[in-house]
Image 1 (cartoon, rainbow, N blue to C red):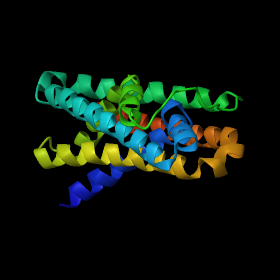
Image 2: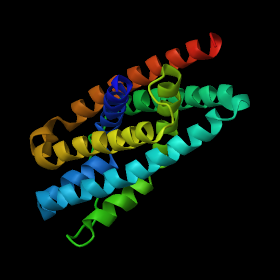
Image 3: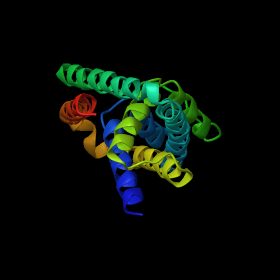
Image 4: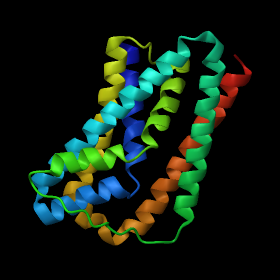
Length: 209
């Protein structure tokens, strides 16, 4: 039971941190809330989170397949290494850009708010490798055992972490808007540092297996 709690909060935190920097999904959640009302913003956020859960489940299936083939366990860790290295550089470079984030124009109506969220989340192809890398780390740490309850916890935590950030954007973006650039930079630096830590841990796992 303890490892389930750890798994949930570790995955929730990872999903939360990955969604914090202003981007297409959270900025459109804010836009939907401003233009169509907070209920539509929540519906949009639910659509995004639902797709994130599907992507997280696909990531688990990929990791599960690789892990159950002993000859590719090292490959799994190397994939995680590449993923974390990429995101460390990606978030660092993003933080270096001195540009104010702007909300991109996306027409959203009450009828299709949910499906618009699903569609935009599906276009983010980085989600699956991100969660595959996390899954590899959690498995090595003994936090996930590829059992039904573990997989369910991982998927739900990924969706919940994402929804929490989108909910905050939906209700409080007006208070953050004037500080968006600084907020974006700080959160991206934090994420870059987090990915670097995960990269180092993965390297240690590879060399001391």
